[in-house]
Amino acid sequence: MSILLKLAPVAIVALAASGCSTISGSGTSQSVSVQTFAAGGQDVESAKCEMTNDEGTWFVVTPGSSVVHRSNKDLQIICKKPGIDVGTASVVSRTKGNMFGNILFGGGIGAVIDHNNGSAYEYPALVKIFMGRTNQKIDDKPETEAASATK
Image (cartoon, rainbow, N blue to C red; front, side, top):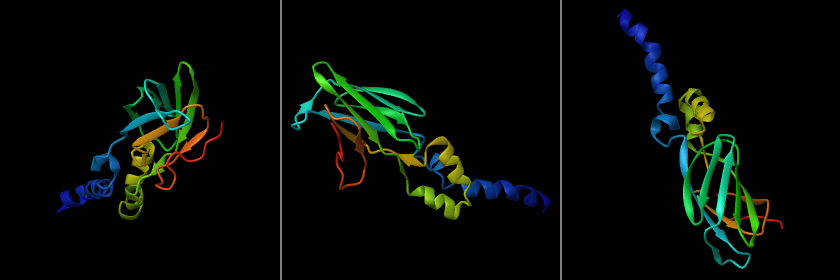
């Protein structure tokens, strides 16, 4: 009977962490696709984009995708193509729904793990950058496709 008492804390920690994103498979990275457009809405191909957050820097040529490390910080994107004005955006990092499940059912252990490694957060899967616009705010809310932008 004493072996069960010794294993009980290990079992409790394993159960508490089992709902976290790290264990449930959504992971610490995700694919982000980038498309670039001219002011009139026409596709702009072969723009070179740099995506940066506090976890690193990734590169993509549009239209294309790159796997980025998730973070609670927004993803900054700068797209350049010769002969066209630069397009920049801040892509909002959203807390995933399972983060709240971690807090409720896991006693917070899974939430702490997922926050620390970034797996509790996600970016929109598709980001549309309008060349010539800077400080675009990209949010994954359905009602804001490319959202507000300033020249």
